[in-house]
Amino acid sequence: MSAADAADVAVGDEPVRVGWPAPVTDDHDSAGFWEAAARHRLVARVCAACGTTLHLPRARCVRCGSFDGSWEPRSGAGRLYSYTTVTHQVHPAFPVPYTVVLVELADDPAVRLVGTLDGAPPLTIGMPMHVTWEARGNGTVVPNWAPDEAHGGASA
Amino acid sequence: MAGPDGWEHRDRCAIVGIGATDFSRNSGRSDLTLATQASLAAIEDAGLTIGDIDGIVRCDLDQVKHQDLAESLGIDELTYWGETGPGGAAPCAQVAQAVAAIESGQATSVLVFRALNGRSGRRYGQADPARAGDGAGTEVVGGNVSWDEWFMPHGLLTPGQAFALLAQRHMAEYGTTSEQLGAIALACRKRANANPAAQMHDRKLSLDDYLAGRMISAPLRLFDFCLETDGACAVVVTSTERARDLRRKPALIRAVAQAGMPRGQGGDMFPVLMRESVTTLPARHVADLLYRRAGIGPEDVDVAQLYDCFTITVLMELEDWGFCAKGEGGPFVAGGGIGMEGTIPVNTGGGHLSEGYIHGMNHVVEGVRQVRGESTSQVPGAETCLVACTPLPPGSAILLRAA
Image (cartoon, rainbow over all chains, first blue to last red; front, side, top):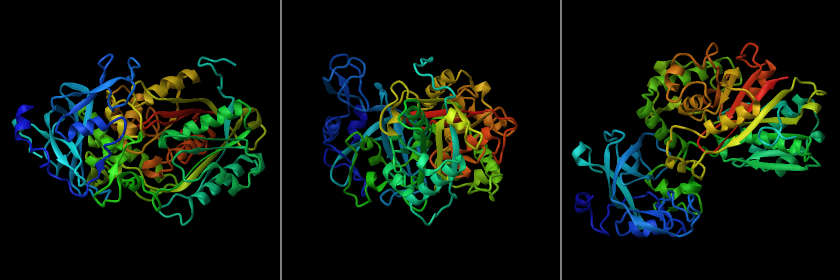
């Protein structure tokens, strides 16, 4: 998604979703994902022995049993797997409406990631999406998703 | 004795007593008091005494520990206790643990309970501050096999929001409609209107009412959601041999089953969004195992209590339990398939949607009522009742049979 990358913000200039919690970045099984995200690199955990993608990431390959793995780059292109517009507030830090998107990576369908769109944008399951980057109050960078402009979606 | 799955438990144990408190929005008493009252009612119903109880099985989300309930009741010789979950997958697995304890000689009469102040206390419909933080803006969430870091920082916070993602996907794959989900809400409401103990006993619901309900997490509306409830339910399990000497007609436990699914993901809720398909529940795998152990199939089931945290859960369970084909749940319920005259009457006490949310344990109680012939929406001649606690995580189920 070089076009999306070019239009994206620089590292350190990510928009901040004020009040929303940040993910832990020092868990043994997922730290590598967040280290890459801090540099705007989308990665997936892959078994070094057999190449199976392990998502949600964990150390042991469920296919071959290896504990050796690495974080491999992914393009940042995806498809909308499902979504919900939340209109009933359940937490003081999350004012409604907002829309939760569940996105499947175009180059690795074993990986689905969650993102947030403001308000209630028009969406269609299967529509192309691309990764963007935003931050939380403590500076942690997280991947987010937006519909591709070519398909009429509003940018997040 | 070896059976088709290495252990023959078929009809060897029975539920001999059932108990419930009132269901309300504010019980005015503790979880422990609720658990105690439901347990006393179940023991009394069985015609047993507190001294006869030597086992307790709890749900992992219950605030009440087995030793708390034993102390409250005055059980002096507790020889077995157990716990299972996660959450709504527990109730039938709790009964299964009781069967295992009795069949292995570790206990003779086991109390199975669930108590919660689900409306006046910790509300499952709100984000859990222990997991999502209190909104100060500097919280860090997830880690330590909670998996929350993949979901909560993006505003995915509650079961209703997760099931909304499943419902949206089911609609896209199969053309399921809001009106079809509404048919499930209406069926449960009609059963509740006949059940004086149901929280929605006096409240009618029309399809127009359903469609006018405010959107909570699209496509799920207010009446797609179960009722946060204060209350408790309990049952007593013992051997069928002992049950023959007790005062109530026993509900024979034809078979029990617990099952997950291949690559079903871990955690307690959100990781299931990573499954290859989110429109098939572990219910299908629990069903395969339970039917095999019981030696019967869906066509032999007279009535079913299906875990209904949301309407969409019931729709997918109907498909996965074999009452209709995958993807046909919508037309099946809209055509009256789950009504009293339908293929499979469902949630005859009103279920979580309209009786109360006792986290699946009220479904066990209602299942016993059906095979006793005592339900407020009795299916004539019902001999076999399925109770399925098969929402998002792994699931559990039991088949009850009239003695």
